[in-house]
Length: 556
Image (cartoon, rainbow, N blue to C red; front, side, top):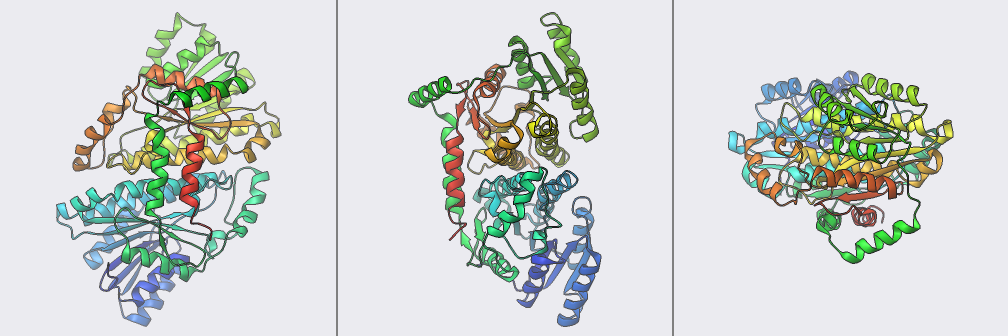
């Protein structure tokens, strides 16, 4: 059992709602000091004054902080003031999928949470002179279930769940002495649920958001706090706790493990009967044709992307536009393909997809030239999660993928004059695997892709837009990405080689053939596994089963 008494806490989003409640409660129960980080100066300073007047000078400290840009300064202030931080609670969050807010939502819910976790880890780790400590990361019940409401938000919470469970694995706790615990809150009576703060990106779905939220059992702020503190006092590192419906906190770690066991069962599946059933199903399904289609593919200049471009052209796509930041690779691909295909059938655009203006300009150029876009393949990804690159990884692997998906939807959707189309989003076996001892941030980003794509691919969206959204989970592939994968810590890097060897590698051509097969045969909302040089396998039912296991304790 872990003590609250005499500990120094740091709470993000600590000026109001659950955060302010945590600050008050832990001080009432003997915490030595609490640092509250928030952008709301008025409420933050008021809380600081209230608590210091009540409990004594300097027990509480408010630090104005935009956690997406100012965390380092906030941690520096806290450690200078109190000498040490024992517990970091990453509570700050945004729940708004609207076009003007979703990038900030991802930055707060995912990137800043990871940044705070890494900074706390560096300060606490015993192998570098720290005293150990606890990091508590807040996920949500929507990270445990799949719903068409707020798919971007749901995916951020799925990323938090996978990242935190991987980081909190027992071997890491033994090595570093830093406990990582995940709490999944249910619907809670805070301003986060204010209709003015909640938004989506499709009007027909937006109208159902608050209706859907109101159907969820609402818990009080104090019930949420009590549940979180139960998880703090009792939780092992890597554990997941459900706090919902004014019920006592419930540890659901075994459910999470069982769900990921179900997800990962298909990674090495070579069941001939299953393959036969898939082939039989193909005969009954409409096959989607590539001929005369206009395609955009991100990260298309080399590796799987370049192989996919070539196969699409061989299948007579009208035009394939290759977006990539690597001008040299674009030039080499152009040289390779120039003698084999008609020049007008390939378009090469140097594009940093994390810059919205460049991505939109590329889409607009293709649409203006062809009058339409039929297929968008969001293939670009980064595997390096060093301290210098992890933010870019999140931007490329998830934020830019969301931006590209929303732009494609806007262009293609039938209800606003488009012709329909298909979006293929690339996830990974890292989103299907039970917690991994490495690649925490990468796995979290790919878990977000899986959740987002499954949710936005649901029939509720497809029936309105006529746009299919398909998810592909690639296994380890013999591309230039694999050798460059690197973590933020040398000790963790040592685990990577053995982990990588446990996955059978496939060729880029096998992966690319899988992309084409999924496009031709997939139903919106499907998840497919392309792994080990085997035919693509539809694992949608496994994903549904896994999320059923994850969510079975949410509702009494």
